Length: 228
Image 1 (cartoon, rainbow, N blue to C red):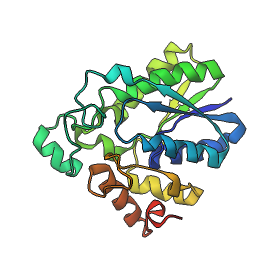
Image 2: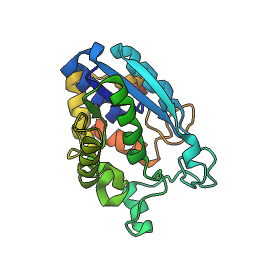
Image 3: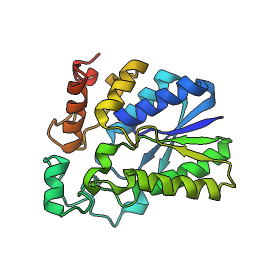
């Protein structure tokens, strides 16, 4: 096995999986999804559909107990509602601190867990889909280039220089991710992004807004909304 892909079921991670399969072939790629107590559990079903499309094995990991004390609004047990404002609007209220949908050190935890899984499988690289829009304004600090560089070094050293992290979109915005994905033929119709956890995307949470803008920038209707 060459690569392990952190697969949330959203646009960015699905594109990462497509990149990994293109480079290594499906038989050399595995995927990992994490349940952390999120309200939008439909993303796990989406991840399975994307993994099945590529014919890669998907492992699931339950880390929900770690976040039981958090009031992050993404969590099913949180007393806080999902914000319906853009990230820029939310950051104007937080004063530059992470937004309420920031899950405490989520990417650090996921990457550390993924490192153990990857080493057990004999992988040489972990793919994950952090991009610059999420890091902008410190909304999600664990999506930043600085964070990525630090985690890359820690995992490379901690693995005995056997394992690396690859975040291909860390310096790209979401519209650029979608552009690359459309070129690769990523099955975006199977992906899920909405934070609200309803039967259909709410269209107004920050991630729905970003997704819609990314497809619009590429002059295409979101395949998931068209049902294609």
